[in-house]
Amino acid sequence: MTETITTNVTNIWLYIAITEFVVIIVLFILLLMEKFKHSKEAKVKQKLKDGDIDIGGTFRIISKLDDAAKLHDKLKKKCHPDKFVGDKDKAEIANKLSQAINENKNNYYKLVELQQQAIKELNISIN
Image 1 (cartoon, rainbow, N blue to C red):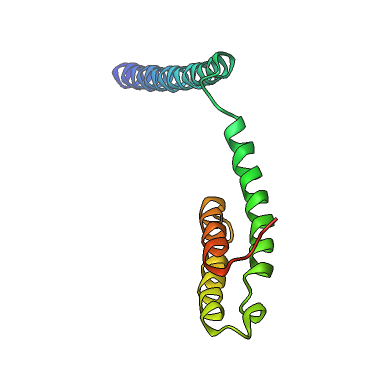
Image 2 (spheres, helix red, strand yellow):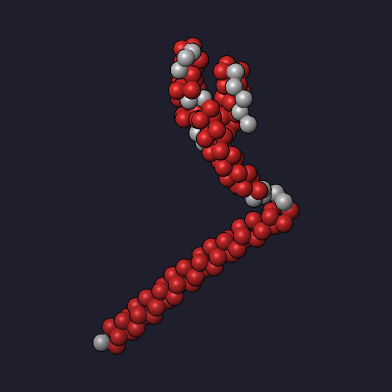
């Protein structure tokens, strides 16, 4: 009977030791993850200080979208096919340009190209 009690006590202490070991490993992993997270944040902060990250790029993109919307509205009005009812050739060109303008309404650089094409082919001025 004493042997059984000793075995049971030993088993209990073994389970406690294994549980403690698992807890220590989990805590160690969590600590490493936290350090890794902070090191990434520190690297980003340092890049911001050094100027390696260009936050202004986001503002330039937003600005170009605004410029594209304004240019799209101008081109849509100036190149509408109904403005060239008397001239079938220009009306056809205006129709193709209007379609291209609507397809590229958020692409500022393509709209600038289409503006130059409209000025050249339709003989219009866009201010």
